[in-house]
Image (tube, rainbow, N blue to C red; front, side):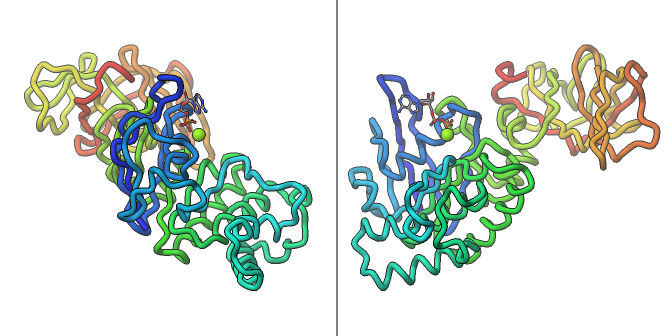
Length: 349
Ligand code: ADP
Ligand code: MG
């Protein structure tokens, strides 16, 4: 079932923390809400769940306006970062909790608990208490509990942020599998982690300072971000301050060829180039500078290059003889690999 925010505004003590959010999640779609801490992501989720009341605007599930419905009547499963399991209840009773509250018949509860534990790979742990489980297992129980009510909509608030990196990538794959098994369930997935958003989401809504900054498929936002904030939050980005010319832009004392369609000659703009699209040595759009830092990352080297007082990052395949700090270096990138951003110049440079 789809989710729709219609100009949803939330304020605490007169402080607007969610500013007229318009956003539609299609039935069966995974939408990531991606943004820094404090940008209003959790608030948006809580407005859907019914734990916070909008100051204005409406929330729809399918074509039903649920703005005035209490949380338990919205058909929503929610998983929060801290898991929020009941420590004194066994796993099976934690998972059954929402069903008992909804007065589901006993036999039906047994079936659904077994099904939810099966889906999350926790069937063997039904009789344990949360303290007898690892963090990852507790998270699975929290997900099982959300699934047991057979929700139309699943809300996940930074569900993996308490897990270590290895577990996290495993759980990401698990969530993708769950999504395939529940193709009708819409998922709103809050995260500040771009990898999670890029991996899991059909679309990403980028939040900044209580506002929706951009919304699109991961590919759209990564390949053609509309503004500097989105460029730097969805993937790594070199953001170079440039001046628009007639057939390209100028940066420091270099002329750079790039598509300038829609930009006004003479205007200041930001050029976005992904670090992995920057190569070492001569080529088109060449910049010369000095090596400020070299990081070995196993399969790649990251070079930080100072070009006329600006830092340019280049991620290149592991170099057999990496340059040293202070060495002169030339880097380049293809004209089609640079995106000219004319929105939001100045704020994030
Ligand atoms: P995010 O999930 O993106 O980190 P939140 O939605 O939790 O952000 O918070 C957005 C803003 O609202 C923050 O500035 C936060 O301090 C504030 N906020 C959240 N909940 C409350 C509350 N119950 N009372 C007052 N302020 C709150
Ligand atoms: Mg949050």
